[in-house]
Image 1 (cartoon, rainbow, N blue to C red):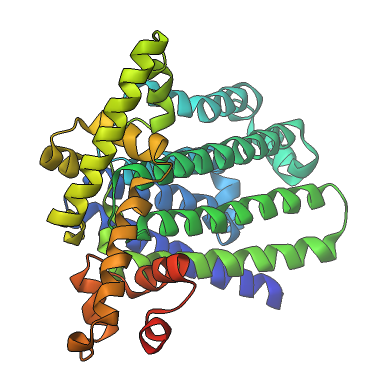
Image 2: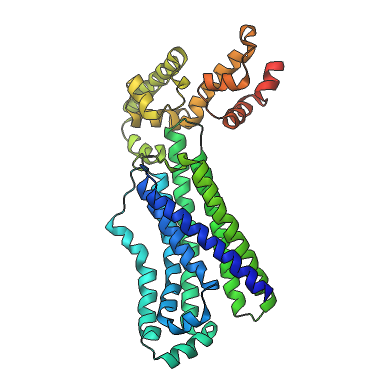
Length: 381
């Protein structure tokens, strides 16, 4: 009985916190309304799914159809999270009619329940509810949720992979908090859902002890992750900035550039060599890398090379991401400052801001990557 009370208490707190954060996201004034609304929908569906632990048994028996419908809401949780990830990653994301396809599992489950459960008389509903774990309807629901977990876990991490690649090829701002936040939240949530699959399997294994402990661990994790959502949302509003999903990766452009005769290729190689030389000269003389928010589009405007060609030039012909290409110049500039006796009074923090970084951790990581030393060790050496 104490375990049940403990689980009920944790579930109640996590549901309350989720709904509170959802209310905040739906009412806060921001430019990122779509992302906030999708995350709010995710939290609401998540709270409805998690509320089953503390719903009064007498209420359920008086409103069986309400309870059956509540079970189907869990089929909306992962689609809402997937769309939220898309909306955060890509600033140009908009909901389209094609996104209604994500409702198919929810609709199909309700169609199944319509003919199998909703129209039953009260006696049969009660009989079904009392023996639900052995029913084909619940097995079908668990199967749908298991398949959703696998499909959406793959989909979310593919979106994050694309986001990271586009970011590295087109942006230089070393703040990668969006990717880290989404990666962390995705890892945490899918650990929860795969544990939930294991818990559902234990329903049929008659191992009550393991089922109770796994349920307890799940509820603790749900509460911890929900509180973590709140802290992140309040402390890191910049997490809701995206990039343009229409930007192409260099590998998607390159095949179109490889046609033509040998003479044409030789001429093209000469043009590329001249462009690389001009780019390096411009970077050394004009130092555009000092701008911490420099993007490949801005650099292409300055050097008067189309962004598409500049992306190919750096990512394919110079074999670097734009992110690393620019940071290399920043590190070289920092090394010059660190070696300069007249600037020995400058702190490492002042130097990293001066050369275009805006994060100490990113600066230290990049500096060590190029020199195998920390900035302080390099200065002392």
